[in-house]
Amino acid sequence: MHLPEDQLRAGHIPAEVYRRLPRGTDVHKVLIVQEAPRSYTGPIVLTVVVVTGSIAVLLVIAFVAQVIAGAAVAVLSATGGLSYTIARTSKRKKRHSK
Image (cartoon, rainbow, N blue to C red; front, side, top):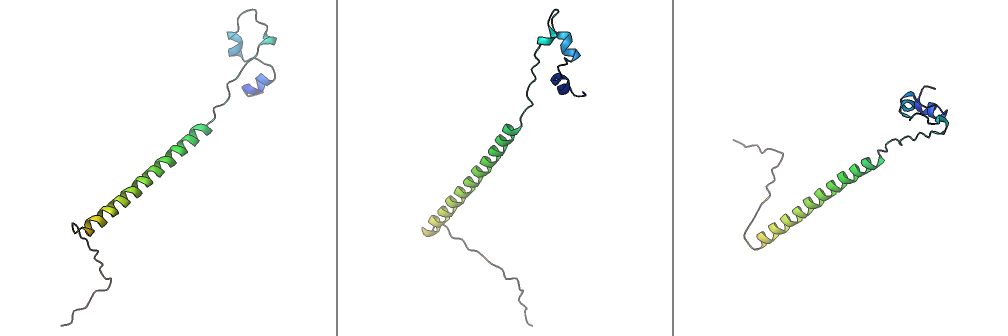
């Protein structure tokens, strides 16, 4: 019996608990209650939900900002208040002949 749990299952009272019992206590009628080990499932699930929710909110904000910016550019270009061009450069360089 190396572990405290083994001692408790066998009915042995650990010395530190035995010393704290009041005098005259019948040790055969002592019930030792152990605290259950902590479960980490709840905090881990909560963290995953918070991170997933934060990412979803940021994606929605980015999408809405893109839609608003696209609509603003479309309105301004349609009214003549703004124009933009997309310049594409070719990958091949043109040779100048002399």
